[in-house]
Image 1 (cartoon, helix red, strand yellow):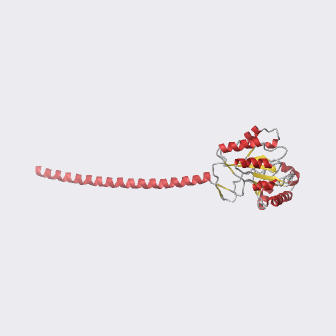
Image 2 (cartoon, helix red, strand yellow):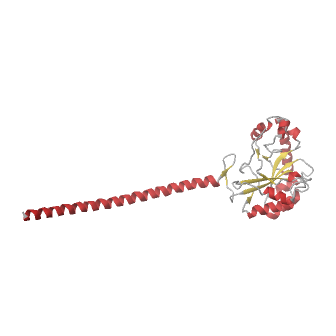
Image 3 (cartoon, one colour):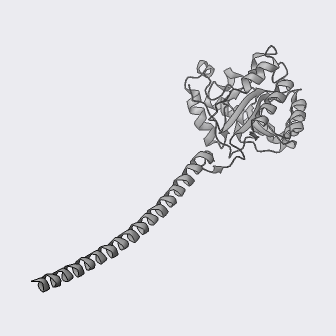
Length: 283
């Protein structure tokens, strides 16, 4: 009986040893497979994260114009200084100040006594754009034809004075103006479509210095007004005026420029590829 028991014990030990060996091999294989799977998942995850990050970067940093073309500002914010209602006797001083800071602006011009300054605008780092020939609301907003005729006249005048086929425009009062309702109900809803069919692009503003309030608007108040802007804005289009009776204060203009330079913003002029800034049409 002792001999039999010994043989059984030896056989049991061999079976247990083989079993344990098999378990070890299977465990090692399983660990290796798990490690490979984990590495593959990490690789796939990293690749997906990179893809998502790239997509988010494009969404956050790349803006597009009305034609779907990409627009690439140098910094997070681009400031567009814009002047309505000129040229005026103040235009040379404004251009001189802009030159001092090495930047340009966009001048939305009208017909007046100082049309010769239109060429000076074009010869500087600034851009010329269209506002109105007469700037008389009862006339230009009396009908679609009246407005388009006025627009054609200021276009032809600018082209005659400068050689530029200007295609950027700003409606007197902006596209959101409601005073036009006094002369023709619903005209702005029609005009925003009409001008684009005629090959023009209109721009409004999302910031203003308040200089249309007259000479009583101090330089400090103009700076304060023009530096109120949405922190989410990528494009800051500042409305100012180039007119004899009031308009932008040169001291204020320096303060506005220096404020945005200190903020790290770029300065640009409005072109056909600039991101659109428009109001909601209310008439």
